[in-house]
Image 1 (cartoon, rainbow, N blue to C red):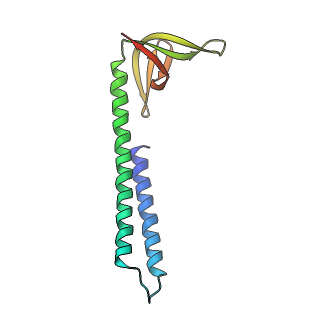
Image 2: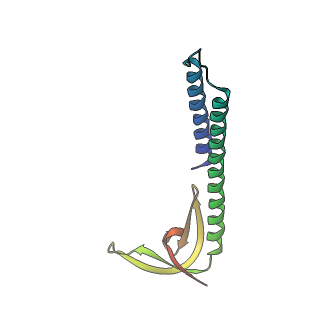
Image 3: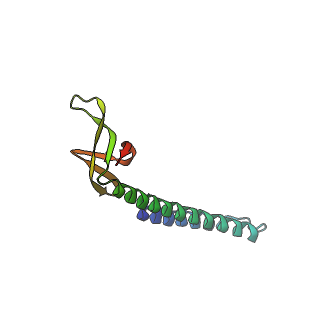
Length: 126
């Protein structure tokens, strides 16, 4: 999830929660109003949810940075990967990593004429 999506998701979540809270308050029994402890508990749960969503977004950013760093360390090394042969069958190929391409957060290695995802690398040799 990108940072923009996380922010818009958190904003949408806040709006939904506030609408629900206002609806609860409008429709509560005036003789038995919502307990302050219940409202505080709901607000605390919502706050925890927001913090978890922010942490998830932060961990995603850290993972991207680690992948980019790792991919950069592979430049000049020989990697084996599964590629598609000219007849359409899968085969194991080996080649030297020439470049790391970052496209919309995705890390791809340029090995000869092949673009290889990090998840497709089978082995690495110096």
